[in-house]
Image (cartoon, rainbow, N blue to C red; front, side, top):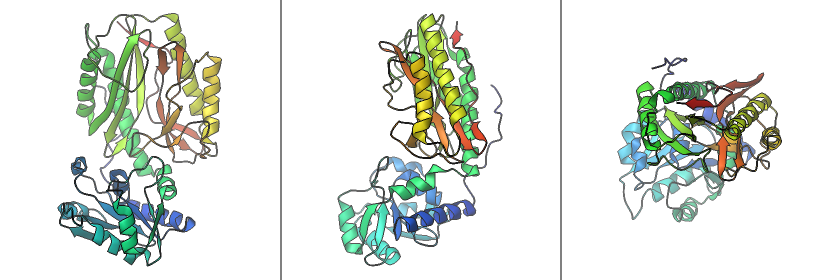
Length: 392
């Protein structure tokens, strides 16, 4: 097993990290006229409090965290979660016995919002793109009415907070990127004659966990003769054969933070069209990494890669974008897309992901993870070889 090239980061964060997150949110709340911010989804709750539990897999109970205009967040949660929440930096933990279908935290949350936002106040919530309410949506108007507040879209505040990562967050992403890079390097050793996609992916998943990953919830393996036709399905029980191209794409997690990148292999042999397509997406990735720096708009980053792909004869890209943000979620804003005018800042973490259809039903996609720095991009993954690896 290849040794990991970066030191394992400590788990969790110091209280100062969460204080800075709350202060950053409160600055944005003032800019957007919000008196409080209400979050319910696991990623937002974890971001502001540090609380995490496998119990998120149960959808029975809603969970609430309120970020006030000043001071630390207030947790309004089922009493089963009180010990875990009190182990975080949050000291104001309000609970109710849940589940309670007649009043599952509604009264308690309404009272908390009335106290923290004030009568007539405005509360931001997860109502915008790429956000989800983890509560019965029909209860939101009732809570607003009982609290005497207006609930509006708070996505601009959440996006502002999470767009730029702290160095402690970046350390975790860098670690899991390197861990997965080392696992990818071993994949040729895992492929045996007659293997199915599923068998190879299962071996890689075991290798990732053995290297120190917490989980690998996104691990896709897709193959096809001379190329693949999608990058989101599989693995299946399709047996690999000579002339196939195999892509594996992983979103692997360490301490809540994702990597998200892929690697491609040819099985036995690769024709000239496959080799040229691989070189095209590799070079488009290189161009994207070189262009990614503070001050560039995401749409302009998209264009430099799209131009490179067009020059190489791309017939399109059904992925719909050429990359995205990355962090506590597999994909985060921004989208590297012609309509996204987000300006990159130092500390933004991105998946650079150019892809092309190079023949009918035959795709090639390449992906690396980077963080934006003042002097240019820092590569978080181990860069793939510029030529397609053929596995005999």
